[in-house]
Length: 144
Image 1 (cartoon, rainbow, N blue to C red):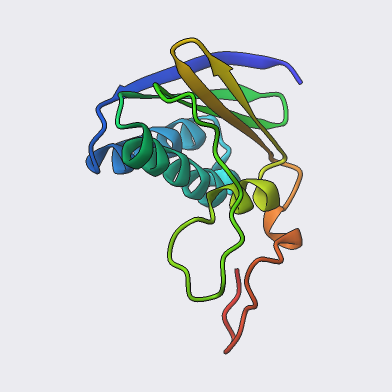
Image 2: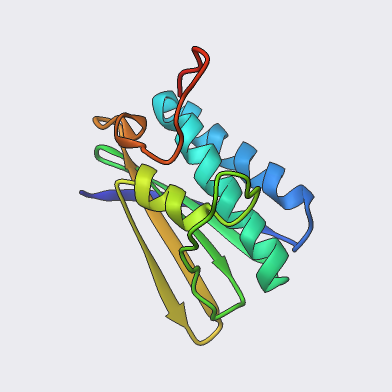
């Protein structure tokens, strides 16, 4: 897949940064006509930026690039600690970020570099990531 020009946003390590990152990504997707990826992109971006704010406590850089068939989003921070998948019980309210990446992203990876790490994921406009999601049982008529 060819990647088009990236848009980049640099944010401080504050709670407000998660909201700003989500708006930034949603704005790019709307402009590119990729609204169908908005929910998943917003969720995964929120998870990654929140983790950066809480754990890295450094500035966060969010990059979003249009691909031929979707989008690539990168979140970079100043910590060299890679995200770890945790097995959570149904009552846990945190610790599901890597699980969500594995279930919803078309692809994802982590790159460690001297100044920290970059977590990158891609979403395809031709795939429905929620079709395969098995992390939650939908009950009482709720749909993903």
